[in-house]
Structures are given as C-alpha cells and as structure tokens.
Length: 230
Image 1 (cartoon, rainbow, N blue to C red):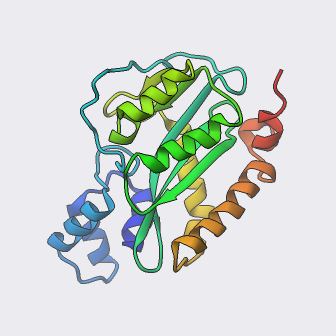
Image 2 (cartoon, rainbow, N blue to C red):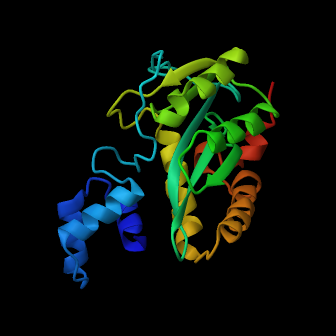
C-alpha cells in the first residue's frame, strides 16, 4: 500500500493493470487481484489525478462550478477542500484540509479513520471560527454534498461551488497541496499511530503556513499573504 500510494502520486493514470505491472517490474511478486483489492481499500482509481476518497452521493440539490474564468484577487474570496489518504506503518487514515485559494493558507485540517462527514464538518467549523469566504469549492463527494455540510455553508451565506465530474483542474491548488504534504512530510516518516500522524502533520502545517516560501506568492509565506487582508 505504501508503494502504491507513492507511485499513484507520481502516475495517477495508473489503474490496477499498470500498477501491477509496475510493481512486478520492480521485483514484487503480486497479482492483479491483490492490487485491485488494495486499491479498492485505499479508494484509488485511474480517472482523476487524485485519490477519489470522496464517493459521490445523491445530493438533494445541485450546485454549479463557480470558478471558471474567475480571477482570485484577495484572501477569503474562495476556500477549497478535499480529502486524501495518509499511510501509517499499520493501516491508514484520511486527511481533510480547508485552504484559502488566494494565499494557499491552510485554515484547518482534521484526521479520521473513516470517511464520514463529521470530520469534514469539524474542519469546516474550525475554519469558520477564523473567517468566512464568499465561495466554498469542493468536489462532489458524499461528505461535501451531504445536507449537513451544504446547510452549514448556506447558513453562513457562503456560495457553494462543486467541481465537475472528471474536471482535472477545477480544484488543482489543493491537489498540489496534497503532493507537497506527501513528498515533503508523509513519505519521510513512518507514523505508527493516528496520534503520531496528528502531531507530525500539526508541525508540518505550521511550517507550511508560517515558514515555507512559495514562489507563486513571490517567495512569501501563506501566513503573510493571508493576513495582509485589505
């Protein structure tokens, strides 16, 4: 699962056959049935360049994608969210984060060993305790399309934006965040518990927000850009 996770980040186009071939080429005697089982467990599919950890539900209401051709000019104009898989030495957990689109500032994040909506709602409440966006963008996963999640956004008068099915670039900035988190932190550590993962990620996100310089932000930190609100 560790090898599959690392290779999937590099080559998200790999489905079960190509992932199996890659592992065999690298000396691992595995068959397609085993890789199919593990990729189902990790909820990885070769359709989008991201783990499809948010399974589509049947929302009672549909929302359009609001960011096409939009120019993001300030903090709190758009927030984005997504879920990714985080490996442990034995097992795995799920990570959700909410990020300000303009500054790349991670407003909140949560870990969970299940894909229910509650850890996503917890992250949302923490973010809303700091500020409020005009638009909140997510994929159409069951967590984000649930009545509980959309109702909380609407109660705060936040416009809801959903990425289109199969639209690779609709939520690209948070996909880049996952790549950064995994290559700079997750893949360098072997966490043996959820608590250890939480402590490690807590330190990393503090570094990411307050110390890591971003070339896309003119070598400033997300914290500097986000809190220079006008």
